[in-house]
Amino acid sequence: MSFIVNLAYFAAAVLFIIGLKQMASPVTARRGIIWAGWGMVIATVVTFLHPEVIGFVNYLLIIAGIGIGGGLAWYTGKRVPMTDMPQMIALYNGMGGGAAAGIGIVALMGSYTMNWTIQFIAVAGVIIGSVAFSGSLIAYGKLQGLIKKSLRFDMQQKINLGVLGATVLLGIIIGFSGAEVNGTLLFLFVLLALAFGVLMTIPIGGADMPVVISLYNALTGLAVGLKGLVLDNAALMIAGIVVGAAGTLLTQLMAKAMNRPLTNVLFSSFGETPSGEQEEVSGSMKEIEASDAGVMMAFANKVIIVPGYGMAVAQAQHKIWELTQLLQERDVQVKFAIHPVAGRMPGHMNVLLAEAGVPYDIIYDLDEINNEFKTADVAVVIGANDVVNPVARSNPESPIYGMPILNADEAHNVIVIKRGKGAGFSGVENHLFYADNTRMLYGDGQKVAGELIASIKEMG
Amino acid sequence: MIEGFVALYIFMLAAFTGYEVISKVPVILHTPLMSGSNFVHGIVLVGTMVALGQAETGLQQLIGFVAVILAAGNAVGGYVVTERMLEMFKSSKGAK
Image (cartoon, rainbow over all chains, first blue to last red; front, side, top):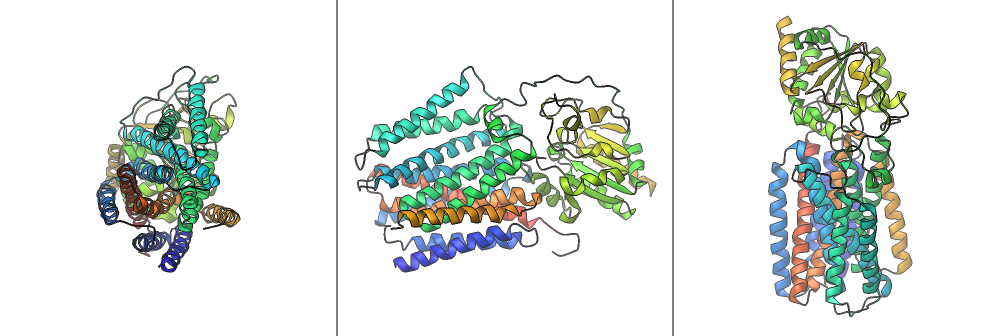
């Protein structure tokens, strides 16, 4: 029996890796998740034959647990709108972290003696899993709008460090306790680890959440991998560590795209307290009517659209695609330029555009398109702000200096569709809005897009 | 039992694999991929099943049970949202 189980786990690990590999290309991505899905089904089903799973009640509990957890997740996963995807991923990720911590707790409570290395690995897994769990829940709450404030108080770093220190200390004591783990101590240990996850996440602002979610995703992977060691289960080890490494890389890519080292994201208060000298802005914002903007776009040769999270909030992506199709009928070349950190997660914009039906081959990354703004007649910035702020190139004093930006300002004309006159997440004034070739088109993204469509249709 | 050093080798190779697999991913797929990797660590479900399967006391059963629910949510939810996202990616060349 053990042979069949191990063979199935091996097959699952292979399917996971091939699946992830296929997800690296838009052409095969869908097949990739289906392959990985089969890997999961095989591994789960065969675990019912696992020689260490014993007791009728336990079998019933397993089936009930899968039914409840799986059913709820199926229901919510099918219904969540695409704009809310980041927090949903955070939530599911947190559940995985909690599960990994749970395995560790059960193992530490067990009456059998563990090798001391394994015992310490179990302890480490509980810490990492618990932090990923409570941290992800906070991230979910923030993105969902349940937690509105980024709580900061004096000595926060020191208190966090203290909590972490106490957690690790208790962990070490438990690690040395052998089979006789004190229940109260274990309870306190888990509680502290959970508290650390909350404390660490609560001061981080909404704009930084993508990086945080990605980090917790990697942490959960790592926790799962460690639990694989504790349970002597290679499928967990491989899948967990593959995700841990992939997630770490993804986190780095994201932090790099924002031009902020990861430590800065985690331990500073960007966005709430704008720092540095703000350069005086010269010139004024110049408004434009939707009808004039429509004409401008209709007679252009090349239009580049720069969408940001504002577009998603306004649910304007469907209208934007309609507008794009209208322009394409008039032989206007339309391209989409996506900044790596546009939206609430890297690639979030792409998902939203894909949902609206925009084919992925007219959507370009920053590196691919940045030289093309020079040759574009019109750049349309909708709901984006910091990612097109030329200050990032010009003013070393600015908090966003050095962040790679889309050079929308190099286009012959720039139309900025914007709800109000406020600054971006970073709180930095956007000099693009004051440029001579920029026209501001105020209003709700969806409504404005509708007006643009109407004005182009009128021209016939 | 997976011996210490063998485990270390598995960790090392798995880490490189994860790094390699993701390093060539275009930005447009970052969100689905984060979601997809989130699904893959749903394999923790298998671990929770074994942990609950070994449970002896009521408290262990309770924690194990909660862990199974959470893990199943991770796996199923991760799959459903990833699949929904990837389903939408289309090429303008008409390929479905």
